[in-house]
Image (cartoon, rainbow over all chains, first blue to last red; front, side):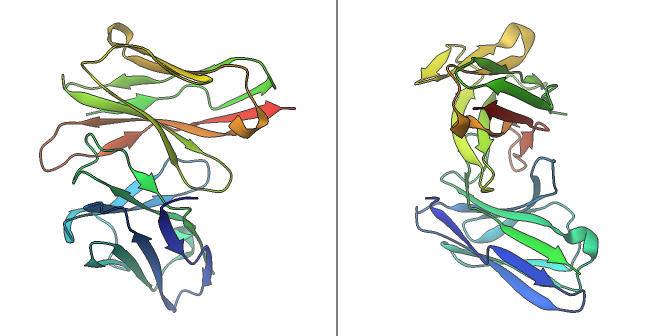
Length: 115
Length: 116
């Protein structure tokens, strides 16, 4: 079983909906990440939080809004998404505050479909 | 800029055969880390190995082995006596020391299918 828990596993939403993806880890990791993965592609980095502060935003559209309420939780708020935003959204954490030398621990992902 | 190439898009082998997944990387940095991750159909990426640029020793873990060669900028992964549970997409990844902007660059992945 993965030590990074993501909910929900599946989400279908309309373009006018507001929804949130949740991620939780209890490994004491200080960095948390959101990745987006389209079918048959590698994961693409969206956001990085280090010590609960946003450290990297990979020019993600504002319809995606991350939040890190505490060191164990990471949310991704979704609003006014487009069908092309349909993808697998992966949360990850690492012990170090950069992926430079720390392995990432991934959750199972949320498979998002925007209709 | 860093780059990771996994030229093999898909590989199929019969169970118990050995299989090697290729990974070639590009970097200007002398200090970097290489990783392999496995992504089974369930979706999560599972960390397999990390290797730093100063350690060229090959590594073996059970049926898995890794061959790191700086001279050819390659970090290949071999599965010996493959099993159906090895079926997954495998990603090679590279991270450089770029203070304040460290990122993990993934290759495009190799889909491995083990035929029973």
